[in-house]
Length: 488
Image (cartoon, rainbow, N blue to C red; front, side, top):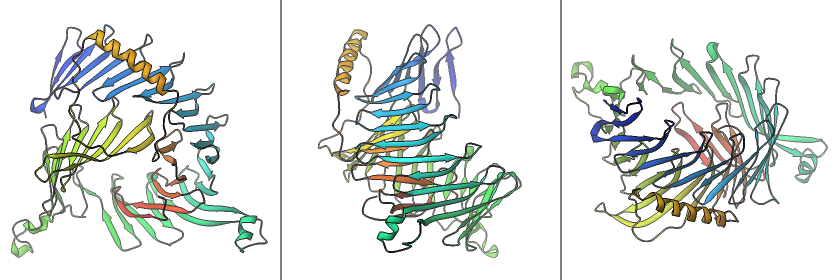
């Protein structure tokens, strides 16, 4: 993989020549800031700064993102096309309120340390989603109580490592008496999840025990503290073996995969023992077909062939973002991104048997972001007719761009007066991190429970009933997943 660089007299990179005839061009202002990036596929990115050097507007072939900042440079409002997200801050710079053009409102209360003690989110003020948190002296969360009476409690050892996690449904005496159970007690709780964590030296997770099913998962490590296997309930063992250069295998003897130059995976789901001669118990060649992987000149996965012959193909934008995936059933999944690499659209289009698009949009999902966290997503109706997917080429004169900018500003102000809320609008609630805490929909609010890594594992509806549960293996693949109830 070879790249060459062209520079101007000041040493700034003006062009990167990439493999396969690809290239990236850069333009700078007088202060040396990048103001435009052009790629070989005619996609582009524009950047505009204020007098303090902070970004106030970015643009690519799919739209603009504009920032409104306060005197301290904090983003108070972010326009993404005709939609917007607004944030308010306290004296310490912590976000205390987030509002969207769709009417979503998230209020955050904080303690003197700046930690969130309560988060309230709603589209309909009559039934808000609420979460209340408690912390220990080290700032670690010890309890989270949702508005549906679901309580998530954590306990830690002296080193600050989580050792116990319990999820329960807290009910009052009146609720219990109404159901005819424990009528004489003050309150009671249903234990819905109970996990115990055991740790070894060097902060290695040794064992996880499910207190309800009594199932255990035991983890093993090599001399370099790399995770190499997980053994569940004494039966199934999942291996994560590595060779001397770090390539991963799912067998203990590293016989199920073939890697090429640059550690590119070429084949998987095979058995290299088949290459042994007949006296060694093999066939002298590979019998198991397995999956095959092919890459482009820059190392991006271009094609994957399944053992049954099904083919997946992948295309990328000039900046390396995934552009399009063609499935074995010939359906096409395409993506659009803003200048920051945030996905703003995902669409699935039916493909004619001869490989020509029928032009029917099966499903289009759009996304609205609050910083790097997903805030809204909604599905739009199918469109009829060929959908134009070609990139817009920006070769307009400056004065035309200025006129268009004025028109867009006028349209934004009109849109800011209020928007029609899509029936299938989803609002995701985050809390100063990348862990989803809640899901707000027209049908109801849902509380999300995460494990010690922050991975979502369960979801509960407004009545405290479990509606979703999922477990992952050590590769992050779905091991078991179940949607309970009608609303999920």
